[in-house]
Length: 219
Image (cartoon, rainbow, N blue to C red; front, side, top):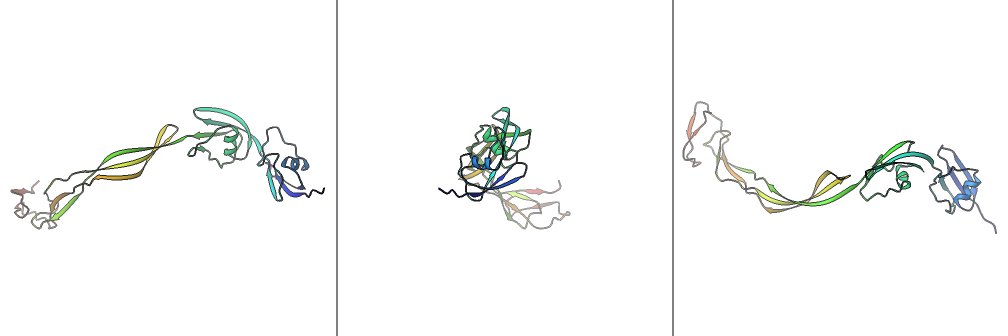
């Protein structure tokens, strides 16, 4: 039986690349390359993975890290390349929305402090007021900035669905997801005039606006 070897590259954590032609498993390739790995050293492939042509095997360094998760902090000696490797090696399971600082993609350094943040998303429904606006009807018999209330406005109401984001048990932000109008607001109608104020005319009668009295502009 002739077993044909494949080209395999082994990249160690110090940046050295060993290129060999061999067959078998990742463990066999490490032996052929003459590498002796320290206890606990991790690779990017399991030791029993069959070799393939062009395969690149990475040998990770060993680090001491400090991990804080779920209110507890512990030290761990791990072998890996990224924070994600450290978290997995420490047995910390991340939820779909959980994150870490530094990020999972960050490379590990010795004595690195890693913190895990638990994220919980909660949907909440609230009823809120919609403030009414003001519609202006211009009247030539009134002065600039003069307003006459014709009818009081009425606030509307709506139902808003929020997504509350809690990080490590504390509310981080609330994001509106949808809203439904219950009652439309009724605008406040008001008369206002665009004409220029005449300081010599202190008092004037506004008959067309049905003010039913004298308007005083002296104050």
